[in-house]
Length: 314
Image 1 (tube, rainbow, N blue to C red):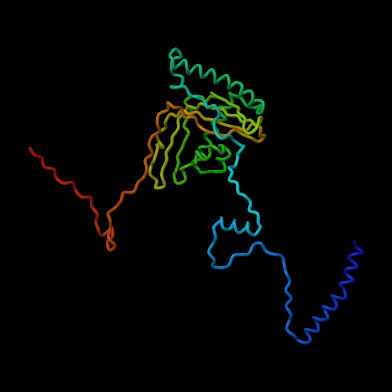
Image 2: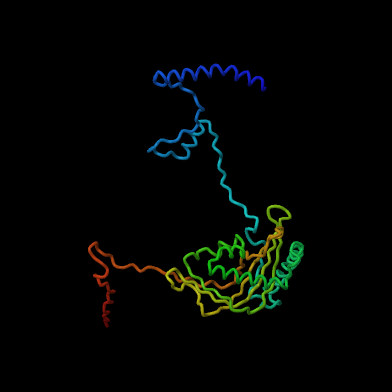
């Protein structure tokens, strides 16, 4: 191969010398330069001209196909998040009246039967959770879960997104921050009326067998204060100085297969018999009088008309 290259160079050497000699002669004679057209690589894409109406996406795709350019098909797919589940598997059903009904009544027998069925499945879930997390304990977990709940709501009132992401799952985060962008939150945990306790547990799989998640439901009865102010500083809901009794069923989740996984707040179970929430007081604008172009509101001295006298007829 080296011999063939050398032969080619020897053949081109006299031709190159002649070309250089002719170029020097042309420069000496001061003759106009000769333009020799040379074909370059064919361009499939030509930049658009200036001040030309833009074409639609379909027209651009048709022009690219005519030029021989393969247009890649776009797939609209939703991202899959494997760090948490998309919901609560087999949610805990709180008993109506929170176990204050008698077990001899019909409703009390139904609640007792449902509790026995759920407790049997919870014991199996506790074993699976302890296989992946040996430090898990139903006695020590309620205190840890309550502290996670307090820290998450404290981070929400301070709008600390980094800390909030480490305390709640990707499913719970949008539910907590939705609608709170232009509001001021004042929340405080006063005390626990009853010790928190674990009432439910599940250990589901997702995507593939063995990819396990632990979900533990915590019953927490506490006293809290909450006040929400709008962007104008007006009170919308609650009261900072009035603590209220709150009974909540919190769901915490952990990706058990992940070595660095941790327990985070995943959701809340609201029973069907819970009382309705208080309505939110919204700030509305009262429309003023219609002004003419030459009028101003200060010069109008707008006053509310007095009601007319009512005449009573016998």
